[in-house]
Length: 176
Image (cartoon, helix red, strand yellow):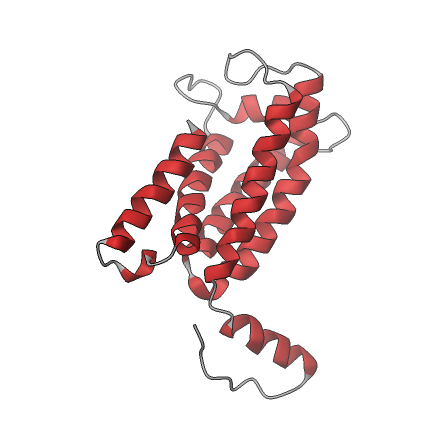
């Protein structure tokens, strides 16, 4: 289902771009919105109570957290919030580059949970556990899409921040 949302969102947003919606004028901008859509969907599971069985829920995700990670329950909520923040950051061109890079870091940090779930055969949402290689390929796909989205970022905000940190002038004309 996640792949359908990502691929369908990408094609749907790009179609809107082809029809004249400037926001989706390029593939990487469409990818940013598709990844944001997917993240809203996946992040919602982080907050769904265990009593809800129509979709993956918080308890499913807590079972995936490796034992060495403290406060598994809190970590699942935290990663859900980070996914939602990443989604918001992706749809705003001025924050897209930072959001894309932050999501790459998040996806790398989530890899141990996916490895643990595969190696220990942790079922997800009552389904048969997914083997290791599809999980790794899935994370690599998310990382690649997150990096791709940064191509359509408005780098003006990042330049201003960098300039301020260096102690120089922050008055840069916007470039797209």
